[in-house]
Image 1 (cartoon, rainbow, N blue to C red):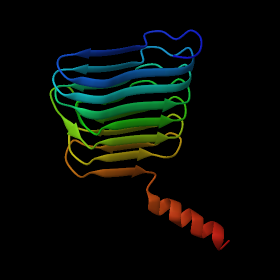
Image 2 (image 1 turned 30 degrees about the vertical axis):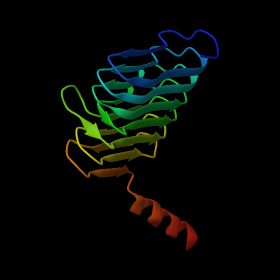
Image 3 (image 1 turned 45 degrees about the vertical axis):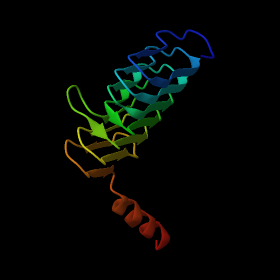
Length: 170
């Protein structure tokens, strides 16, 4: 932890063979940044925050999990979680956004990726395998799950291509 007025920063492990559980904060006014591993065989669980006013950033591993990470760069982001499963990542770069990757209570998600590169946006990849949700514009909402092999990119990449072509030929 580096900075001022950080609170609720925690790293915990409960069970056997929990390795590399970390909560890292750089900045000020960050709260409830947690990384926890509960159960057997949890590896590389990390919650990282860089910026101001972030809260509810958590990476949770509950039983036999591997490489869950929640990362936030920006301010006033809430409920950024990577949990319950293997290789889940929730990443927010922006302000006032949310991201969730992995399994909700009682379910497991594997290789779920939720990315927000915008303000006032959300991305959820959950309760399945190989789900990807990417919100790349302010106010966008990308939802991938429940289910397997779901990809939701908002706005769609096709609209980006059309906009680029319009700009090129106008």
